[in-house]
Amino acid sequence: DVKVTQSSRYLVKRTGEKVFLECVQDMDHENMFWYRQDPGLGLRLIYFSYDVKMKEKGDIPEGYSVSREKKERFSLILESASTNQTSMYLCASSSPGFSGANVLTFGAGSRLTVL
Amino acid sequence: GIQVEQSPPDLILQEGANSTLRCNFSDSVNNLQWFHQNPWGQLINLFYIPSGTKQNGRLSATTVATERYSLLYISSSQTTDSGVYFCAVEGYGNNRLAFGKGNQVVVIP
Image (cartoon, rainbow over the protein chains, first blue to last red):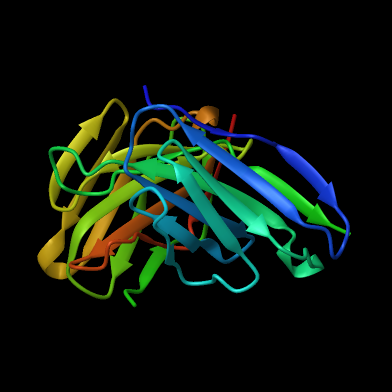
C-alpha cells in the first residue's frame, strides 16, 4: 500500500513565524498535492507538483509556497503565518497508472493552529 | 472551474439503515472519486468511478456521466460508516481534482 506520511499531526505556531509542513510518499508517485480543509468549505487545492522542482498554483496559493527537491518529498511553507491560516492541511500523492487518472492517496493530515 | 455539489449536507442514520449520497457536477469529467474521512481526519479512497457502477462490500457507487451525477449507496449502515463523504472530480485537461463540500454522516446505534 502507498503510504503518505505528514511529519506533524498537530502544530501550534505564533503569528509571523515561518512554518514548514513536510510530506513524504514511499511509492515513487509523480504527483503530489497540498490541500487545506476548513469547515463548510471542503478541500481546497493550494499547490501541486508533477515532477521534481516543478510546482503549479492551485486555487488558493496566496500566503504559501512549496518545495519539491526530491520526488518523494513535497513541503508546504508558510513564510509568515497568520491566524487565517489556522486549518487542517492534507497532503496527497498519485500516479496516473493504468487508468491515466489521478487516484489520490492522502496522508493523515496536519492540524495547524496559529495564535 | 468545475462545480461540485453534494447532497444532503448532513445525514443521521439508525444503524442498519440504507442511504444514498448524491454528487452533481457542472461539466464533463474524466475522473471521479469518492472518499470517506473518518472522525480522526484520515481520508480513504472508496471508489474511482468516472462512469458505470462499482461495488465494494456494503458500499456501491454509480456515475451517470452523461447526466453529470454520481451516487454513493451505503447499505446496512454501521457506526464505523460515520464521517464525511467527499466527491471529487477532474475535468478534461484540468489536471486537478475539485472537491465538493462533503456529506456529513452520523450513524447512531
